[in-house]
Length: 278
Image (cartoon, rainbow, N blue to C red; front, top):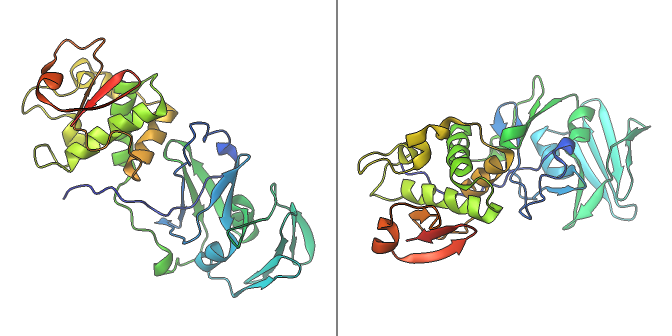
């Protein structure tokens, strides 16, 4: 089945991912709860290295007993099991069963929704949280919690897709700007969706029907570990970011030894050191 590019409405990052958005793109970080990727109608965001998640949406995932809003005080109160938590906009402390607790970040209102740091939420309601750096994923586990079906996100890719796409991006565009890295990812994914190429990322990378398609496969550098920004570019491309349009080919004309592409394909645009062709 062809890999489709879908926008996944996935939750944000956690505190130690600070600076990861220096590329200018929103970091496509996701949250997994008890093995389920989480969908939410209110998009989380990163601010000063802290990821903020919407109180009401995450409370639904945790099957909270109630969520209430006090508009005059700009306070949200969540009751979940034996915990009553109240957060006030602009405050860096929350009330947890009447006791002040540091959130390592302020409660904020954005788009009419109250947001709090994801780590504070997980810790407060008895969950464990782990950061998987290469995949920009926060994994939350809580014993006995069953994630509601309508909170589970549909994903069109998995870690293996990210891994191999990051590898070819890293080999072909190391040192390039993020737009160029995304462009390389676009070409691979466009080929996956084309009837003229294999229908998996791995298959496209190692395609040899008309000779080796990518030099890193021939020289073995495809097996090098990707840099962090290559993983970021891979996730951005998989979630729909596009800088190379429908391009199916690219080359660096400064170092290329075979010019079949410019002689036979339609030029699309130049990004950094690479020319992209349809």
